[in-house]
Image (cartoon, rainbow, N blue to C red):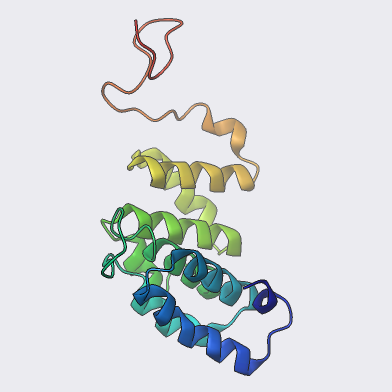
Length: 174
């Protein structure tokens, strides 16, 4: 996959787009992830329709794990990086998804693309206290924009997950 990130030709890019489905159906999540990254690195907008199709919550036979994690996350991330805009229909679909992996991947891609309005969206997401992986992606995104100091004031609030007494840490046993 490294050879595709550097100096791939148009034919190589089309081959890589075609291989996305092969990697997905064979549950080769490592190659799938790096193919998505290579397409985004190269700015291959021709991959957008295929990435949109693959940015879903279905797992092919033989792929185990949370729905959307193995294929949806990298496809959503690459799609958002390539789109570079929050207002695109496919990006909105992913951001509005109930699937945490699609939402997190989209936030990561938009953050890497420095999409217009992403900082405001990340702050909004942090304030909503969504599921952990989405919350963490929003916090990391804000930290990338230099807003890390403000994040300590927005701890994740969820019943039974935080410290209960002074000096106690989350997950400690007393």
